[in-house]
Length: 156
Image (cartoon, rainbow, N blue to C red; front, side):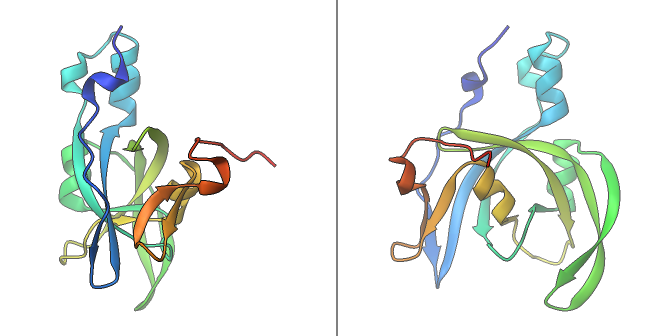
């Protein structure tokens, strides 16, 4: 057995760029992670990436370009209609990743972005799952201050 913390990345501070909030996160293929926890896959074989995201509260999902999805070995699950700034388009939804920011993690599906230079997007589902907020004044991602910095999951 192993500790997931063995692969814990060194997180960079949230960074700003002309009103954009960026956040680094560590992603692992969730299926690989389960196999490693069961002793069926060596931990060093778990496909993973450290990604700098643009935090986008208008996006629901974790959105990655195809090259990152392929590097993580994610499997296409379905296609969905997605509302974008350019209208409704079809986008592929892929198997989950384990996303880790600070001391928090969640397993969430991934939406494919076109390979047109669009940066990886961190949507509101990930923020909510990990009890994270955007501090608008400081323009950075922070733990929910209502919970004194503790990770609290709502189940109301």
